[in-house]
Image 1 (tube, rainbow, N blue to C red):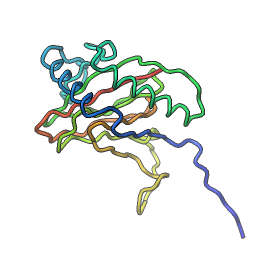
Image 2 (cartoon, helix red, strand yellow):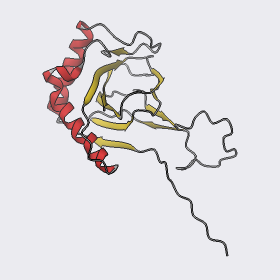
Image 3 (cartoon, rainbow, N blue to C red):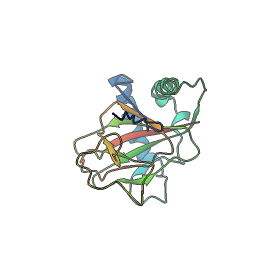
Image 4 (cartoon, helix red, strand yellow):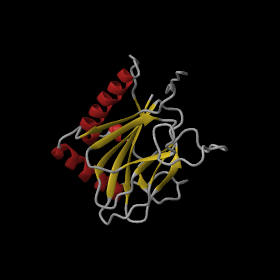
Length: 195
């Protein structure tokens, strides 16, 4: 009888943590985010999905209100590093606010030049678009056909629902996007890059 083994040598890992700061701290961040939307020009001029963002216009890691959250995110980034058997010390290289209203979205992109990227949802009302990741092997010119049910070897895309006070950490090379939003109340998230 023939024996065989299937090994997963290059898995894609995504870190997921909930309620990393208190409701009170989260509320302070939400209020500050709405204030920034009123007073700070949106960045990301090359995006077509019409997301309000402070990318390259207002770095959150220089604002005291965001410090408790960013401190917790850094702790979780280092926990994820430990899962990789790494003792590296990573630091924030960029941080920005994103606000999505009905009909807005974020097209597929990656955060080149960084090790880890993070998304934290401050506000996630009903209808908020999911954060969707794409298999880094896409587009595969010769995909496996006739898959009856997707599994760890065959997923091409995976989505995470927006949940308030939820943190997702991933390798920065992973292409990701935000689905078109149907929410009436603003959906607010924070993105952070580490290297």
